Image (cartoon, rainbow, N blue to C red; front, side, top):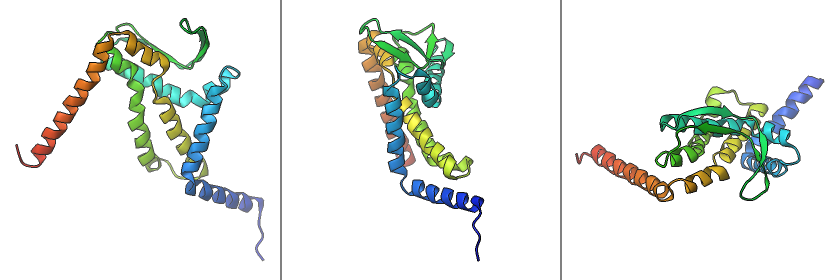
Length: 201
């Protein structure tokens, strides 16, 4: 006669929940995304909760700004993930800022790259998607962390309204031309690389 202890029951339940989550990962990704979005929507009521939930994403969002600013000679001098509220001068509405980076040398030629730096979290989230469990053992809790990490990175990869405003307020024409030139250069490089690998050069 098999005797079930509390430990056996808990382990069995955890395995069943893990199996259910693992087989319905897309659904749970949507659930977590919805929860994060709802928490952000109520940020004016509970700033601390929003800060906790967005801590990981905010850190990587601001880190992307900081690194790209450093690389493009923006001279970053301040990095913060401490939230604070302020009144938007243009709209007069209350805004919750979860973090920010200050740079002393933002110019027309680097503002686009610094402002759009969070987009780099898109390939980072894809890397996490592919390789997360290469470094961490899979179980119920790490599976939940896996989904939460990917969703957080994707949410935080979107540049903020202030980021877009910086792009449009500093050298508008250049900020449209710069990514086009970079895109064309990368495309031509890809063609040349493909031709070289094909033995044409």
